[in-house]
Length: 485
Image (cartoon, rainbow, N blue to C red; front, side, top):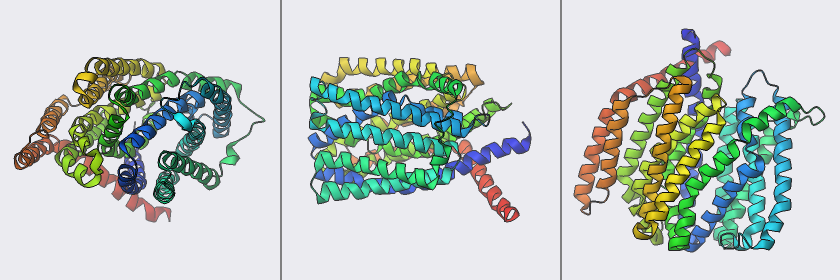
């Protein structure tokens, strides 16, 4: 690869990350207003109920959409494939799957299988899955067209709509669980319409000429990801269902609140992850992909360490100011969950290697490993240690998957990472987690700030390198603009 093309790869990644970050940052600011609404206008049982319904919906989405939204990105970014054929097949698959859902769900309701967790909200659950699946497919295709600004703005719009409908339905109409679900449904529906109109997506649909060979290729790619994503989601959500079964729905509400601060870490990673996923696919055939992947991962791990460390310093203060009074026990579990987000983000990053190399079956195998470890620890320790067991099981499950995926990535793309920074930073972060349980406030903050300073020192060189690349990318865009005008 030439030096100009190599520099262009980093600039494109940084540029896309900045665009996603601007859109995501605005939307995450809006999300901050949702948490006080949820934790002040819903009881712990109601928040636990909504959490369980959303988790079930997240299981059903990959099953009935056949995870075709993943194929939209992988095949849509492939310059050798016609986008019209890709999007046509995407629509054909997702609407067929949702039609099957609408037939199956009434039958399931008659059996009362979901009554324990879903209750009277089966119809809303079905609508939720339909609108979310359509939004995922359409937004993924927009991203594959490299309309990153439109994609980022849609994220902001969807969040604003969720906030608006939540305020109207929960605060104004006192609709509790039903209002929570309807707000998300209406937001996804608005997003679906907005993307269709803004990108004129009807131009990419031609049902008269369906490419059967491409259809088979897309299904071979996406179908193995169904069990992988369901297993991955089971790993993510088994904590909620097992805590509800062992400890009651109130504990699920506490666990949901405990995830609010850790989710800040994963949300910020998502800004980068969306851009990285595109770069991993487009750079898969480049001569120096191993070096590219390694450099990007080094920057990614530094970002995650510094972000997680900052959250660990202030997690108790943020919980006190941001979370409702009935959910203050969340501060006991948030530190461990913040640390778990490090490995969740790392495994997601390395999962892009499977996507780029079309080794999607390996995603399924590693998801099984995470599920076995997570569920096993919960079964053995949940009754005895309560929600501490769920938090620790998440760390262990994703930590094991990271090790396996790092080994696979080394075989597939020659991937390496800085072991000194990795082990040094993780030791400091574990100490910061433990420091959060020191009862004396002044002593706790003194130790936390000291450890965070050490964490920044360990990552200083990587931080400097990352900052210089970002400045170079921004300056490059500034210089380029007058030439294009």
